[in-house]
Image (cartoon, rainbow, N blue to C red; front, side):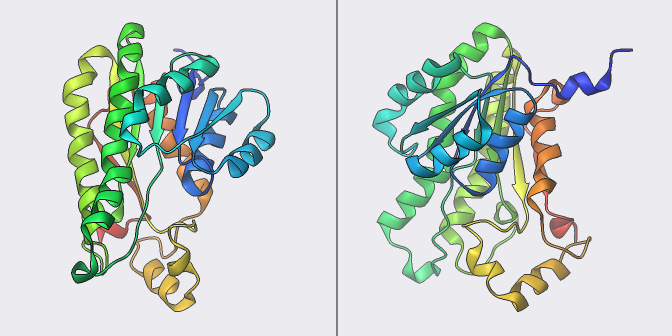
Length: 253
């Protein structure tokens, strides 16, 4: 029997992570690099990307770009591939949550939310998939949410986008898995990131959220490492079209 640890080894793989400047995206980029992949971090904030690159060292590259710029997707894909070659793994961690009541949502705000959370992951994947098909191997990891399955106050645009991510993930699997490309999604619970600053800055609210999980606590950044590495590696070779909730059992209660 081969060493099972080799299933999680990403040596020789190339990964692209959007939203790599902060939060779960940055953590994902660092995790993949630590597992041996050469990683291209993509985000709008160059300075924050440069900090991550300096921390990570050799095998890390950055692209400062807006993944929601639909007209620039082809150029972005080429720029990403220009560092280490076409990615084998793409992790779509970039996202936005404006937290607006349904009556306050504007057409512009709706478009921004769906554009970054749903449209960008599809079209960037579409641009990168041909090279994965040529290799016969690829991993697409989308980011779902608690709001993929639950309705939260002030979350109608965000929730709609994340519910869409679930169906997009299944449809990606149907379209591309015959070519050796798996498509799955991670659904984080409450983790301390920029997107959830308002939640964690309110200690009472943070405690209430923790109490709703089966484990009685909110997420720690390291809780994401194993699930992400599983979905990005050979270990998940027969897993596709799934949403893996990393939420301490929040959605189980």
